Length: 573
Image 1 (cartoon, rainbow, N blue to C red):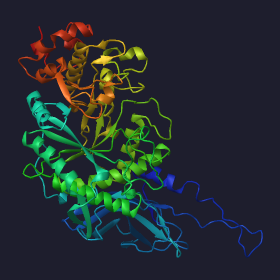
Image 2: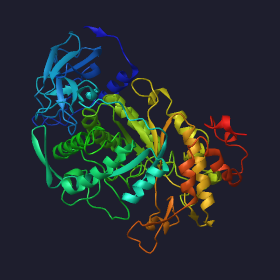
Image 3: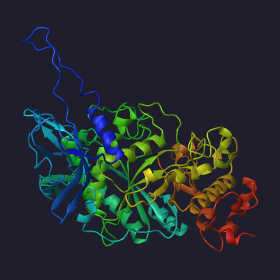
Image 4: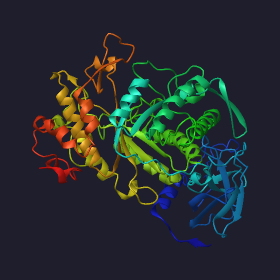
């Protein structure tokens, strides 16, 4: 019997996990032989380690790998290896006979199948597995492999839009406040896309041979915002949010019902059913095409964040489940978005987001540690086919109602290594140091893109009352930390204008005050000191002068004393 050398440890472990407990299982008594027990057939002993799954020549998918282990008993399993295609919502080969390719055992592990792009048989989103046949059914003997280079199909290949600075903001979408953001010199902007309201009437779209209708009014509002930002050379980051809509049950995970609005704000994306998967890929492809280019009449989105703070199901609800199953379902949907967007726009970036609870407040069923989410997602995507994903992190102060994050170590939640319960701006290097580890780097060995996509510092707190200087000092310090860290791409403030509902709870994050007499609207009334600080924070001639006041508040003499690699160190006196 021909033997194959053992390859990568990961493949061996995958084989062991796949076969664990199976070879010695017994089946129930044969009904025709009272009291008789029989052993199950021997489990396969070969493992097909798929090492690459990529588009070649624009029309073929090439799947390559190597064999490990020994050939299975020829009295039980035949002399062939079979390649099966699984849709994203399919998890096993039960009842399947429709293999798409086969080879003789002993031949190189190599398959080529048609891509079928643009048809109902499109394989761009599929995953592939190798199986053996025992005369009655097929048993999987390989890892799962997705296409890892959807970007080779993209018709939009313009380079990624690198911003001139890291300064970002969630802008209040009115003409006056958009102009205000331009005056601030903001280079990064956030746009929330209500995924659950995209389906509707007014715009027809066909994808993979199926027709869809999209909400013209919702999309025209997005068009206006994204186009204006793009025209001003801003890098637009879209957050895809899946709220509840009674009319689109296919968008939420099977069995999930509407939750109380004060407990669950958004829902996880459903790619675990055929209808959910097909709807997601159609909407994602449509959005990617619509916001594809600087020359597009609708504007350009460069970054896509899929969901919000996914380590807390309050923002990504799919129902209680352990972290392994949770990541499996999230990764299933994320990969659909990734494939749809990158096969349209070659250099767009996709992210998932977490809050600052690094190893804190997890309950194992609806709340998870941010660190565990990052690790599990990296493991899952590495095993199924690498993706160039990035991390959108939210390093708020502890608690959110107090702005002076530089004192957060007094909470006992801040440490300066990976054992820290919380990672925020006080110990941001813990995150960026961790993301430099080999297992978390991208397929080219580079540190993955990290953006700080949401943080804010209140100007009114329970202990200080109204203190605009304290808020301004916190923003200055925080921005300097992020701006001086080479692994942070963007620093995006959560509010341009205070929101009445947040302000009522001492979370006045805006650079503008709001009209508290209009609780259902966000109406700006007056700029705070933090507005001027944020405007000049990256102005080479004025930055240190602008932030001089903050040093006595924080209790420092020089910024470079507390910020490693401080960007403006050469200008300090």
